[in-house]
Length: 214
Image (cartoon, rainbow, N blue to C red; front, top):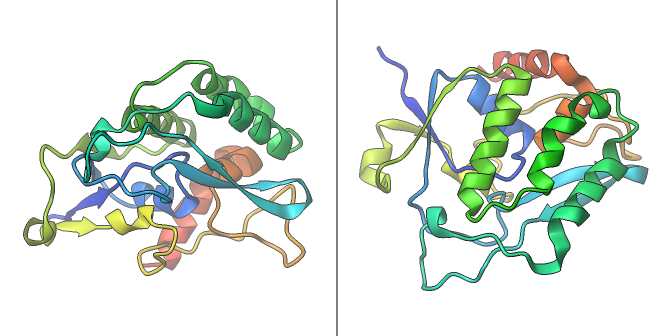
């Protein structure tokens, strides 16, 4: 029986479990026709800052021109010099991690070049991160919105874009973190937390997470 294609929503520096899902499948479809929803991983990520404080970075977007505007049409706003602020936050949080300097030049251009659309920005980051980790999953975009009736032909994990959804996540870790919280390992962070701390071993962490969640 052929494995179903995974259905996901593109995320900004998506969480580690998002990339664990990517690693664990042969083919993924990124939904681009769903309605844009605020306060999701589509335009925000969570990193672990100095002192073990979880910090949320949010990409500002231009207010949708009409209600229920498709994700693919959402534009990035230049409000608040966010590119500089995000890059400085990443540097501050991870400059002492084992692999930040190794990957720094790969990430820096995303905070100097201007992307018009949020989806293009997220997908470009995703492609680069997959290449760095060694994830070779075949990725394509949906040609139309996948409704409930059609979604049964997919492994539908689009709800992973909502931080409040836990049912579809994969438990990843623990792995080394340069700034652990007082309670120990902090889960559910951006993929950069894994990559900057574990480097080439990130693929092993994702592999083990998939094996443990079979």
